[in-house]
Figure 1 (cartoon, helix red, strand yellow):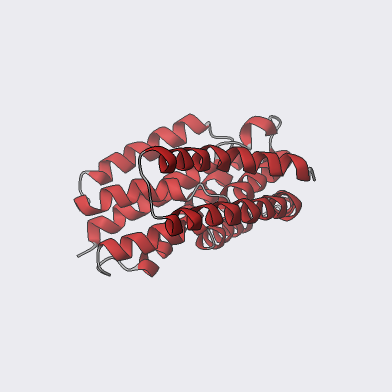
Figure 2: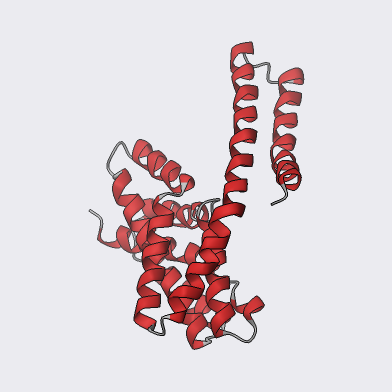
Length: 228
């Protein structure tokens, strides 16, 4: 575990936007002093929190994700591997902070018409299903390009029939699922599965996040077709 490297990574992520906002405050924007001080305090808290979070990911999430991937495939039963992958994808995404933020924003903008819990459930189901699909792709050695081509073809077909109010939510939901909680665990899971089943594990372990982000897009679009 390289603590210095993690601190440097977080600093380089936060420093540019903090410096830019500070520059705007000095030159053009002139926000109230209380608001600007709150921003600086928030930036410091984000720096501390994100550093601790990434350290936790490196210490715990990545190793356990890879070991789980190895374990579920070693059982020798495909149905068990796919079920485990679905549950892992669902549970990890429910805990994803970005998904919680999106669901809250959608609930607020629509004044409760689109329920927060429904968005979280639908997005997480989409992630879980497509994580399982990604594991199936690795096991069956299906080229990623075919899975993505078919997947996005279905997405754009469903988009023709869904409610327009769901289009933006659907594609945003694909972005928020690639957050700091979901991505490390899913990447590690894919690496663990590929290390057992594939000769080219370095190549096959990637692509699982791409499928995981496709799942919620499709799930929300389908929700928009039936939502009244």
